[in-house]
Length: 344
Image (tube, rainbow, N blue to C red; front, side):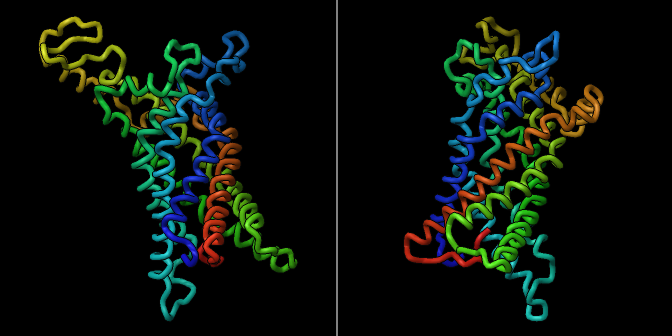
């Protein structure tokens, strides 16, 4: 990674994440509401079936939790990706096979998948809080949707990681598809511009080529993985609905078990009963997918797919475009240059 330090990667990733969060977050909120099981109940007109104004209110609810977690998670992703890609590339290259034993797309997919596993571990709690905060009514008496959501997890904070498998299950195939397509598209555009004599070598050129390639690849991957995203949304929204995290849950106090209203409970066995009910009521991603199919058909599994494709095109383009431009800029400030092969 000539010309770039780990600090460059972390800073560039943070800037890219912050830029995307601010600009495309409203589209993500609308997508979450469309995919929620309560969409028809809260966000459509009962008589006409068309979206009502509530769908577009409070579209920045939950943003704070995402900004806090996205910065370290994006830094972890890019740091892992860059180092893993370099390691896998060197291991894949031999004297007899200078171009690699495995296709370069496999190297990129493997590196991005490993980076996603690391990133998701950091991002999952914020994603759970974000999606539940996005569903809080804008007419709620609570001044902060994020704090209101956090309060529901106070007695069972581990529920915040309930969606890790679902998030990783969505992001792994997404990045495994996106990054090889992205790398190939970017290479193709650069080769075309070289042949036509259009290459300028500027940061702006590097940024827009990366943005276009990343946005196009991301949009395709996003639409294909929409059913997994729908299931992931349902799982994360359900994390707040279990008996252990609902507003009427029981709480352990020094003087014994009392319910949310302060009334005493007969014995500690009631708490065990709640745990068992929570475990029995927790559905797997496969079960939730089948339930959506039974209730809404194939269309239900693809709900929000077009919107997800649009915001991913914008978000992925800005994200990777800002990230790569940031790396080039930070290296240039020190009078160094990032080699083409060391960019994303």
